[in-house]
Image (tube, rainbow, N blue to C red; front, side, top):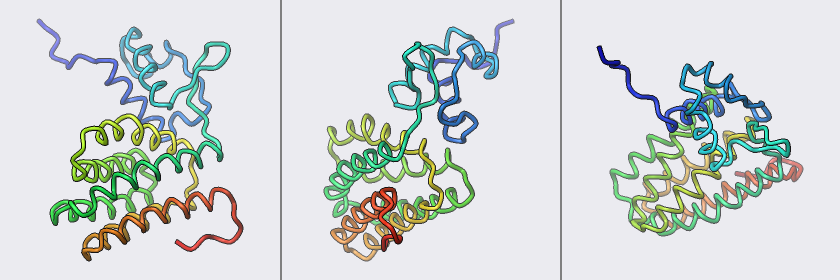
Length: 218
């Protein structure tokens, strides 16, 4: 009889590892052994190299000088640089999208913003990442620009994933409040103010990471 189980592919293995990374089952700096990963995941060992290559392209896995691999380590400087990239790209997309987002899109964003807060509060980091990606997709779709959509896939998604390797839970409320307030301004038909609120969110987060002293006003 044939095997009715779904075929496992390298992208499936990459997704399983990705979720373990964001859940800190595999925290930054964890060494990666292909045979051990295959055994733990119950997959064909031949699928693991391609899965790790995919995660390396995303910046979640790094290759050391001795050719071994580990979960990437993101320090404070890297995190600030990632926030810079996210601000430049995402705010530019949001400037184009904000006046175009209709009531259904705003309602979807509002739901995601509250879901994001709940996920961050509960420590569900894989879930919070998926919610953020949904928020970004709504914005990118409203922008209606093929090149910006490509930027989302190759820049925003990668930068956001790497930022998730640098955990500072004391700042999560700045992230969720920024999104909620930006959406509230969209709902009030103030798209320019919504864009500025999102821009300020990134500024505040960056200043906090730089250790500017007393907490910056969000």
